[in-house]
Image (cartoon, rainbow, N blue to C red; front, side, top):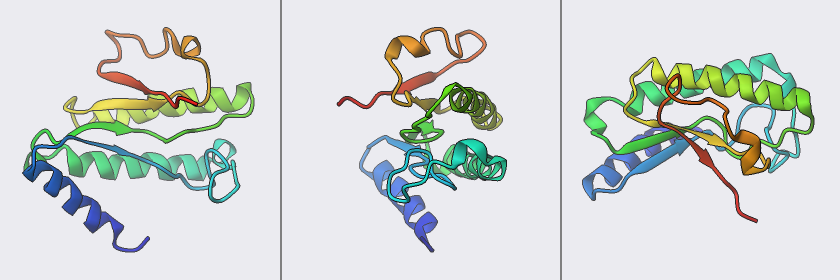
Length: 144
């Protein structure tokens, strides 16, 4: 959507003005992560799409952790509701999470890094990205 970035910047400022916190996520990624609107789940096997997603995380983080937004953005979610179909796709997602975490942390540790539970059980993620190596990591869970 052309011009959406300007609206996102404005929305974060509006939230800041009234004391709300914001979570920013990649709700859709190139080639599709869950078969939603596009019907495609090609992201897991497309290195270009994964690189573009990491670049987007970089742009979003570099913007929204700057002092002009204060502490308004409390988390960056690396990808929303990823839906891996097999062990290879889960491994790809885990690698993406580590790389995305590193990208967010390259701008500091102001915001938490939010991970989609990817339609796996909560126990599945137990021990993944443990502290103290990883800090301020949270899991976004979809309750059905």
